[in-house]
Image 1 (cartoon, one colour):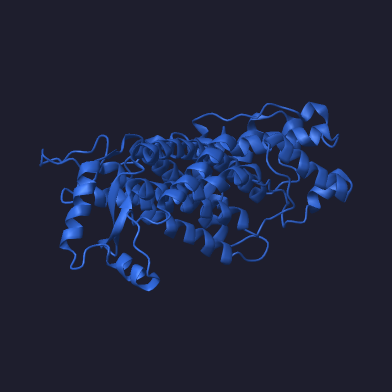
Image 2 (cartoon, rainbow, N blue to C red):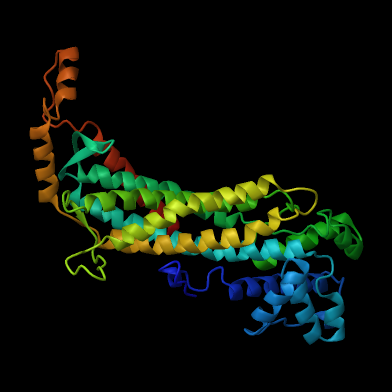
Length: 404
């Protein structure tokens, strides 16, 4: 896929595309039909290999406008091509929300896998940058102004901690993504009728989860926390990358000059420019991710009755946009940190200049502390920065071991 309105969208490939979504819906129908046959509810000759063609996307998308979602149109296409016995049992016991919600979960799983791979690459790259520059003197700034001496290692470790905060929950989220099987109103009424008992109906839901390699779950239907939880995880990733990117855009200003992208972007009219394009595009994603996540929460809060009148429908494109943009931001961040360059000399010069410019120097806080304690000041006023760096690197190593 490409998107001229969102440069870099092609980096997300087929993830959350129309084709991927259609294939996921077919996979749900295929798995359910197989579960019915294996349970002895549907006859063996109802088993069939369900498939759709690339050209079906347009047909199904246009027909989706009739019923408000693409599942009915998909079922019509599949039944038209199936033999009589398969058509008779196809989709029996399911409702459109079962198919659509479970298909969305399948698509999201692929997104989370990709984001997890990118996060691991970022953790490795940032760890290497810390090892290279950990003791290099640098100026720490608060509220845009010179504050205290620090190190480049301390600065990078804060980026790394943010990435780890976002990346660590992803693995658990991937393995707990739930199947959705509830029937028309979330009571499994039709499935219970088909299966002959409540236990058998619940077992069919578990069988579907097993076939799709999802977590078994009771119907969640109008309880949308599985969707908001996914959205929150994606937004948290974009938050961490946005922080990193903001520091890069500031640090790469010519008047600061401490950072540079490995390969910056050019200007259509100013050949002398070397724009921090990766950082700019990452910030773009970070600025828009939060509102998309908020829309998912608003839809969840507006969930009503046993199927929402618009709130459920608002989730699909919102989650798709958030997911694809997160993948693109993940790829851009990996590219950024793998090529990021630090100018240690410039960082030290900026620290020295700020110290001279300050009325009492940058160590006025230290002087206050020594007056209070009566002890002479330490030669290196960076406190526990080195210990923080070590702890963050240890956490990174553990993460990489767990994710390998």
